[in-house]
Length: 266
Image (cartoon, rainbow, N blue to C red; front, side, top):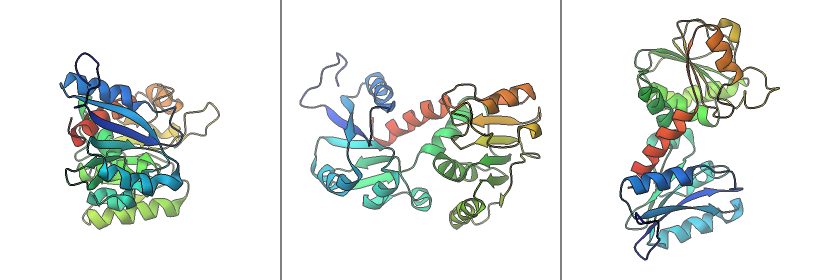
């Protein structure tokens, strides 16, 4: 939209694709970025049922005023298969969270969850290069974070998941892109790591189990969350009590919005 907040015939349309959709948080952030960058564009919600996704994707190819969309639950995996092209990492992950419409109508996708997490660390002055990283989780955001940590140069990545086979499968997928990486499947003990990351949803509810053995946290660790609410999860509280440096979940979203805006051409 224009700087005055008006939508005109030249306004470029962006969307966020989900079902249900009332909970999504990205449109205000993307619209603020568009205004700050002086772009005549607006993001609006697109609620599409899974059974209608393929037809909707075809329609987007013909919508000339459409520049792209954020893709979220439950469409991240199915939309990856409907794109005309996706990044190698998104292909290995098996999901995307952003699409861009090219001038010829092709839909190009990528997965920026992990890149947003690493960028959030960087803004806080935390470099991941050469670190020994421990990641709790092997699905959802953890999947993308694992790829981004390896691409960012961690010396070693330990993946710990309640279902060990899922962690092993993630390890194998990463090695297809980064065959020289050192990746191991671990347990709930984060000892011996510099960077400890919770990539699960454990901690959102008061009665959740801990995502890892918090008694093993030490003062020389950085402990990072992907959860944004509550701001101080039980894991972060335990880490703070142990003297660890903590990193909140919100920077991941903030930085990912910037990366998404770049990808969408804002």
